Amino acid sequence: MFATITGVRVLGVDPGLTRCGLGVVDSAAGRQVRLVAVGVARSDPATSTDQRLLVIAETLDQWLEQHAPDTVAVERVFAQHNVATVMGTAQVAGVAMLAAARHRIPVALHTPSEVKAAVTGSGSAGKAQVQTMVTRLLDLPARPRPADAADALALAICHLWRPAGALGPPQREPGALTPAQRTWAAAEQAARRR
Image 1: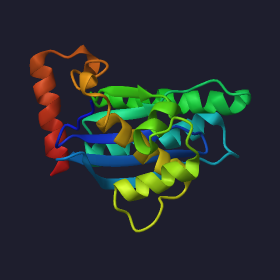
Image 2: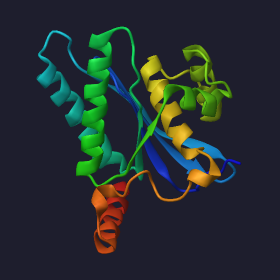
Image 3: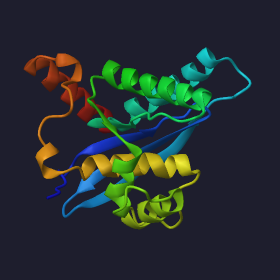
Image 4: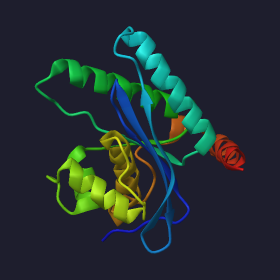
């Protein structure tokens, strides 16, 4: 059984050191989803890793301020044969989680197979299938490009469509805040959306 909570905004982050996909999706009644924003944070491979991470962190901060998501959904890093790629991906995932924590926004992690299964029905779907389904689900005139952007939107949709039993509290409370602090953080997010 799957359900969608209406009126929830999720920022999906497909971590990557050269291209970090970003996608903001709102939920609506009847498992409908609506595109808010999509893009890619880019860093120059010719610069040092610390400066590349800084560029991505600054872009993430801008997106968090501008779109005030209720949750940040990040792709869970998985092992690959290319150690350099997995290291960069893990570093960017950490930057995304830290940025969300600084903004007191809960983080959810989803594996690539969970995301593919949520949007295509198959955990082994290819990138083209994910792009096609994201385009259909969000009623877009064209596929989001590059694929990192489509993956970020798929992450957001996956989080919104997680199993009904998982619709309770987020995976962690934002910074283990008190009820008053949570109310304050929610008010700040609502004010940013205006």
